[in-house]
Each structure stands twice: as structure tokens, then as C-alpha cells.
Image (cartoon, rainbow, N blue to C red; front, side, top):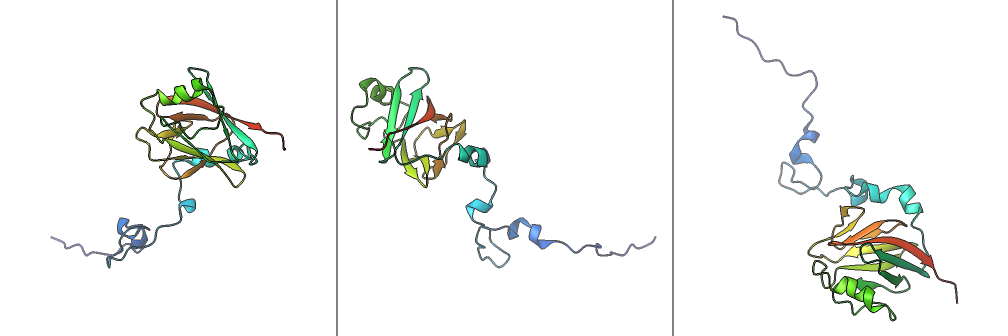
Length: 174
């Protein structure tokens, strides 16, 4: 009976590939390593971060976000010179918003009272989900709460089950 001797592998074991050594995890001494910045990590929202999409989304503070609700055809206009919270408690909508547009949001029980916020940021219209119960979606991808997402012309924006199409209208300068 021959005895086989153990010989070490030609390549030493790469400890950096250990799951315990990943950023944001505990290392072998129990110390947390800082995670890489979000911008360096691959995002499940990569399709929403493409350069072509971002180029289609450049707007001015004088821009109005136009949401056309798909089933009712109602239109909601949100000027970007202010921030707007949209939800069933539709008290924070621009003056002159037609009652039909308010009703399209207010009567949809899947939409939270304060569902999402629209605002202007760095030459873009952005939407922020306000930790709504049933979520806010852009082109079918659910948004993380309290994170800003850029809106682009032609996006499908969904607040719970309420679907709308995004477009932009430039206001004439006064």
C-alpha cells in the first residue's frame, strides 16, 4: 500500500475571493470593511443609468413633467420649478389641476397617500419613491425608496397599478 503525500496547489489559495472578505462584510478579525460606493457597484437599475437615456432626459427648471394616465387618458402637469408629492392625498398638486386628474390618483386605492415626489435636480427631472406600499416603477423596474431616479421622455412610470407615460413640455421664459 503506497502512501500519497499531499502537495500544495501550484497557485496559492486566493483569500480575497472568500465570501468573508467581500466589501461590506466582516473580515476574519470581525471588522467590517467599507463597501464600495454605490456608483462603483453594478446596479439592478443599469438600464435606467445608460448614457443614451440620460441624454434624452436633460431639462430646464422651466420644464413641466407631463404624465398621461394610460387607461383614463387624464393628464397631470407638474412644473419643475417646485417639488410635488403625488399620492391619494392629492392636496399638493399644482393649482388648476383638473378634478379628473386629481381623481385618477385619489381614487386608486393601490396608490399610497404620499406615493412619490417629483423635482428638478442637476438638469434632470427626478422621481423619488416615498416608501410607498405598492412601489413606484420606471419601465417595469421597481425603485428603491428615497433614491432619486432620472425621468426620460417616453418612460412608463407606474405608481402601484396606476400607469402613465412621461413627456416634457418646455415653458416659455417670462
